[in-house]
Length: 327
Ligand code: EPU
Image (cartoon, rainbow, N blue to C red; front, side):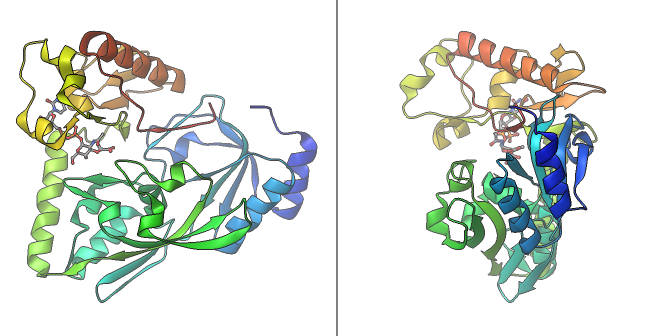
């Protein structure tokens, strides 16, 4: 990616004087890794957000809308363009629906829904990041995912320069995937539908899932969540090489036709493997942690090594779940 010219930067700053130059992105990420954005702008509302994108477009400035930073790896060189953070974190819970702006924290919204005695989003109380990011990646855990509860997504389409309201079906949600990963739409807001239930029962479920998360995933360490997607297989023939390794594949994975990447990494004895300060978590094989001062390059080298080993020894190609920014 080419650097922005001084002229591009100055023109943008004239229109958006609150934008910043060379803003370090590491503090906005859970991994605490990444170089600066040449231009950085915090949009308070949709008008600001769309205005900044239109301005960037007019000057050929590459742009990227940052979510909560919980599922991204930012390059050590940062982003040569405009990074926008959308700060609208408003949401309302009304009867059985929740309307939430893309910048709202998933945990906060899910907690409020639980507090109102609504069931269906308890799992969200354990998912870091923003609602926009959760929609983008169809986030999910413990049997729930965004696609189960989304009714509509309001977005901005920069190619057509217009606002769109997409019903769930048009969002093309699939396992850790959505239309938004394939078309540059900017998620602004969503409407979720939940089911009224008994508040105590909902709170008990929240507590149970939070405990499960504490027991099975690293706590208090810097990570971007799961690095790889689980391997969804079509037929058991895709597992031939893995099966030749002897150990049996857990029944639950065969049943759901998806092999957990963390289990594969663990099976190969790769927990604790390091490149520089990037380390495969000792707790869960699909987490890579920054053990202090890791660079994006360390993380990428470690993920490449893991992919190679899993491919060579188990015949499975792992795919990234984490979003790469600025590479
Ligand atoms: N396992 C191991 N060793 C490991 C990790 C897992 O043996 O190092 C085994 C576990 O014992 C269990 C099985 O693998 O029998 C599945 O593990 P887990 O329940 O932790 O689920 P997962 O498939 O590894 C997925 C999601 C997580 C989500 C959990 C819980 C993906 C890539 N990961 O992990 O999502 O929190 O289920 O529902 O889909 C994320 O997307 O960032 C993420 C963390």
